[in-house]
Each structure stands twice: as structure tokens, then as C-alpha cells.
Image 1 (cartoon, rainbow, N blue to C red):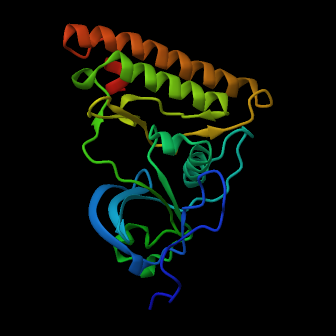
Image 2 (image 1 turned 90 degrees about the vertical axis):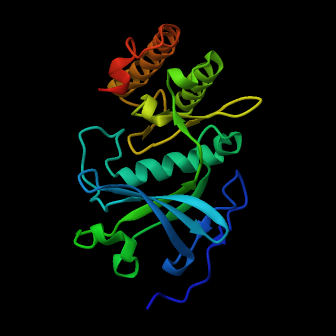
Image 3 (image 1 turned 180 degrees about the vertical axis):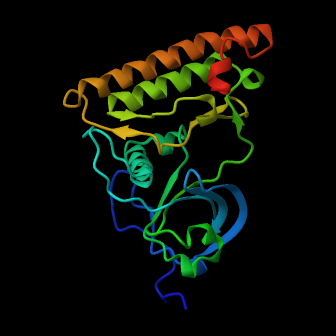
Length: 244
């Protein structure tokens, strides 16, 4: 039987936008509505769920060992990459600005026996973990169909802000750049931080700094190239960004 712990409650933290994070989320609190992705090869499953009156994305990562790495700047566990990135983004106001999905909290060391919808993780050696995020309806991948210079400039500026606080996105492709068409101004949203790195700029390895530079140059090229593709009405200059 599921443990009789309290319904999900706001975290007791009292500052920096983290006060409303959900804690003590139990299986009985979560209503699974839709499977958005199941990929055992990637070790991830993504669901649309309802917790209380809140629609959420529940992104479940398979458990991973704290493996050693030659690069001290790299966290190898995808759940920790993503959850730490979202905590920082929440703390710094990016969620409030709506340029990333709102972060609602985590569910850690999930007992899969109590969560039948997570059956694909049942035989894993380590329990899975999940991040809880804002469900955003009517999103589109950034492309020529929703192109505007304003949208692209905002994607670029937000990425620069990530870099300034030591957050490398790690996967800055259009699949992770979403647009919600609305008036008077579209909403632009960066998603998926499971490839991210969080470092202290100036005290990280030289090759890590080069990753920031490469990501910046990738974005600069994409901004210019997508404008050209939008003008011509076809994906050509940005082909490798969509089909790499």
C-alpha cells in the first residue's frame, strides 16, 4: 500500500521563487493523463499528469550511478543535470519570466512498485527520479512557420543569460526552442536541460569555456540562417539543426 504521507505541499523554502515547490508527492496524488514519450534507450519517459489542480509534465529519468568522469565540470547523471538547472532557473526568475517551463519540484528515488505507469523502470538496478514541470499547450518547434526576428533575438538573449550564470544548455537545437503563438507577443521557451552543465565561469576547464563559445556561435549562425530560410520559404541553411 502507498505510504500515508501528506498530499503534495509547498516546500518550506521561503526565498527566490522556490517556496512553491511540491514535496512529498505520493502515487495517489498523481493522475496520469497521457504518455508523451517512452524511450528506454535514452532512459526517459515523459507524461502529462495532474497533481491536485495543476497540469504538469512529469519527466522520469532512469537511476544512474555517480560515475567518475575525466571532466570535473561534467555531472554524468541526467536527472541531476536537469533538476539542478531548473532549480537555478527558478531561483533566478527565468520561470517567472516564462522563458523556460515553470519548475514544480522533483520526485526522487521512486519506488516503481507503487507507480504502475512506470513499469519500464521496474527491472532497473537503481530507482528512477522525476522532474515536475509546467505543461505548456499549443507549443511549436521554432521554425520558419513561426519565424520572427523578435522570437529569435529573445532565444539568443536568454541563452546569453544562461551562459553568464555558468549554465551551458548543451543541446541548443530547435527541438528545444519552443514558440507559443499569442498576442501581443509570442512566448518563447527553452526546454530540456538534461544535457546541461553548471559551472563557475572563470574557474572551469579551458575546454568547458570552449563549449560556451561553440554554443554561442551555433546560436548566432542559427539566428542568421533561419532568417534566410524564412525569407526563401524552405529549410536549407538550417537543415543540419533540424536533421542532425
